[in-house]
Amino acid sequence: MGFEKPITIEKVIKGIQANKYVLPAIQREFVWSAEQIEKLFDSLLKGYPIGSFLFWQVQPEHLGEFQFYRFMDRYHERDYRHIEPIEVIGDHEIVAVLDGQQRLTALNIGLRGWYADKLRHYRWANDHAFPKRRLYLNLLAPAPPDDMEFAYEFKMLRDKNIQAADGSKFWFPVGKIRGFKKVADVFRYCVENKLTEGGSTFPSDTLIELWYIIKERPLINYFLEEEQDLDKVLNIFIRVNSGGTQLSYSDMLLSIAIAQWQEKDARQEIYDLVDQLNRGGEGFDFDKDFVLKASLVLLDIPTIRFHVKNFNRDNMLRIESQWDEIFKALRLMAHLLAGWGYNRQTLVSNNAVIPLAYYLYRKGSPSSFADLPQFKADRDRMRHWLRLALLKRTFSGQSDNVLRAIRRVIQRHYDTFPMESIFDELKATPKSMKFDEAELDGLLSYRYGQSYTFTVLALLYPWLKYDQRFHVDHIFPRAMFNKRELEQRGIPSEQWHRWLDHVNDLANLQLLQGLVNQVKADQEFESWLRGECPAPQELASYRKRHLIPDVGLSFENFPQFLEAREKLMRKRLADLLRVRLGLER
Image 1 (cartoon, rainbow, N blue to C red):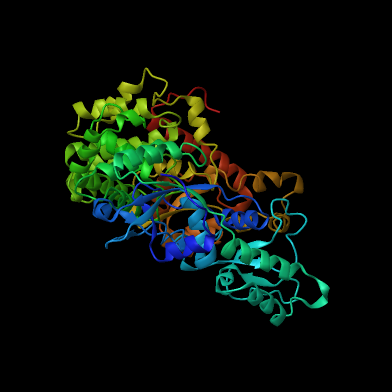
Image 2 (cartoon, rainbow, N blue to C red; image 1 turned 30 degrees about the vertical axis):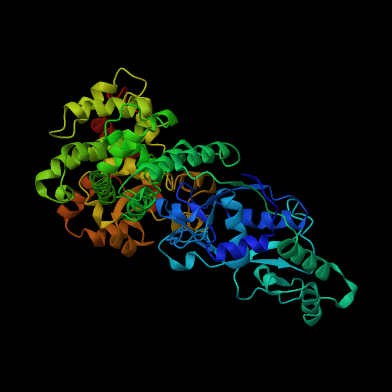
């Protein structure tokens, strides 16, 4: 073993294409952004070194002992984020990449594939939110002067309409460089596309330099490891990855799980569970760290901190042996969360739901737990406790001590969810779940669009069936809050701030069923409510359920409405949180 003779980028890309270069199962996912890929190619063209690589040569007789994965040549942030397993057979050796996966994948995508990340302001469910982009290089000029990080203008662009209508740019598809067999072919391309006209040598100089970098210069310096013992290779892998984009402890745990699980493919199982959890409802943001932490908690492993010395073979085999039950409990937990109206924006702490999963696991809850009437009281207790835990930020900062304390309570009490016992366990700790008056008033300060707002409103709407997808609705529609509307209604300009500054206040928000909210749209609240509740008893019921005060509901009366409704909400929250209020404000 030792440093080998450097090779060209083209040779490595061909090897990747032929599955000669593969990824071992202990490798992480591809995590680079499109901009990082652009910067890598810019650095190459500027003459910067690409760094060294660590390759692992696996002999044919050992191929069947390990799981390998192919390099990505395309990346889709929603649909294609995981590397694919590959069956390597035959009497030829292969090379597994221990260090350099991100760089080589970036080169492979830039030269052979495409990249699709989500556009801002689009919903995750919208297929148009993920346009495919390929790597291009502008051959007419260097990077703009205001872009200090780039010397050359590399961009991930959509294939259609890439050429500037005014001829100010000529976007060359970077992967096309591999099709030129000799430097004369490069120059001929420049001539045929009229890039040499006008006397500028920048296009031909740039493209020729790119050709030499990819095809001719041996820029890939690598160390070849020939050890065939996976445990030793794992130690090398962890040592090597202690710098740069540092391995998290969960990466190490996943690596060890992959190496030590005997019957199941740990990578496939864990990432499949993550994907299934995140597809629930309107989507969540769980990751492998969450799954691994939850597994340690659910199996009553004493040390749940991510520390390498605690990730031993016995613990990993325990997780494997109980994986089906862990999988079931976490899936059921995600199903409950979706039914309670939570999603990636409103679930502000993933660790806060681990006690719910532990309770479901410990109790051996059936999948019908989420739906059958006999479990409703238990579900209501779990939901109420979660809301308080989120609003109290019980799991902010280091949450391991809280998880262990709650686990001890559930170990003793799991006939029903032990909400009160958890309160008692934590009441003398810095993580007490008891609210005081100042904290209650802090809840009323949340506004539209903030992540905690949904949970405050949900606490005030315990009667809703959240599986019907309720929206956070402005009672007085936002469209009315503009200077023109205020002026037309004769409201003095010095008073406008009482409307414009408070349109997003909590007291102007309600939870409304999605279809009803769409019908309500921008209708003035007073007239909409008369149509929605024509009978006096219906109106009285609506006011009670939505905490609508007995004041005038015209737009002109908005400040008085806001003050009165906030008082009702404050009183309701005080009752729910068992807070004794001081003097009424």
